[in-house]
Length: 359
Image 1 (cartoon, rainbow, N blue to C red):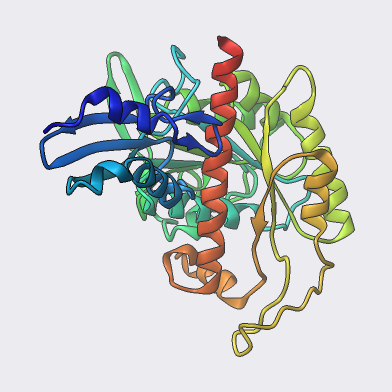
Image 2: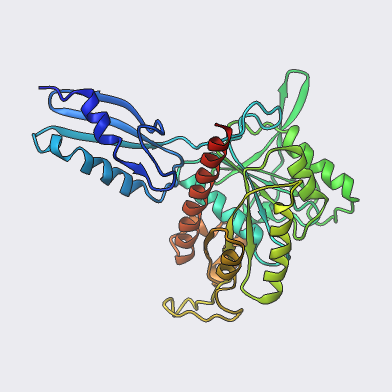
């Protein structure tokens, strides 16, 4: 006897997405439901391929349908994903679902390293990812992706010539470093730098992307204003180190995004160089720059703490070699993986809250 469809839907309506606080039926996450005499199959469409709660949601579905499977009916649940977005009907980057600003108040905190590794991990987990190196005066993305000699392509679209991003390790990249000799200094006034960023945004063929990470320069400058005035930004990530001077500058960066005329949600804080771990003593942690500063900053401003990244020699070596450490199996790769999952989760929550506001 075939189980009635309404019974299956009623059972699955008791399963909630832990982040979005709604059931899977209401959220439209149950798709391709197929009911046979001896088998029930369906897709659960998550809001990101990097969902950290994938196993829990699947387990909850199995539990809700337990009485049917106990009758000898096979249960086949396919966990898939479709990244959410609230960006639509925009002439600039129409096929990009989420634009994420990666910022810091202070230079030297490892912002570009964090951006590179987050992008690589998100791509490894199945997302379509790009990076714009918006640090016009000190571009480092070409070095970190071993693409110093690469050049963007050209695509003809109607009557326009568009730049085609360089692709490396599954991530699409644009940087002023691809357009200027690495030994030459970029000596531009602010408006020229802002114009370069606008070209990366509006005169480039990015194609479909789930996440476009913008590696911003330190501080608060014309570049930051140009970004938020040119396109809708899903949210911002603040990168800091534990010491007091970095935290003070990180607060300024956070305050900028919260200004009324900018109003970009803070997706969370990442603490880089949180502790030192020697390669020969992987279980030891030495808090040489202070302890817990990033978490305290997040708590003070009531924003998510996305995680901490240790200070290990492998991160520096990988960056210099042009192979992001997240491509390896080292301890730091795990840290970036966990942070990327939490970041994807916060993006989904922000998008869901915007949809609720629209309604």
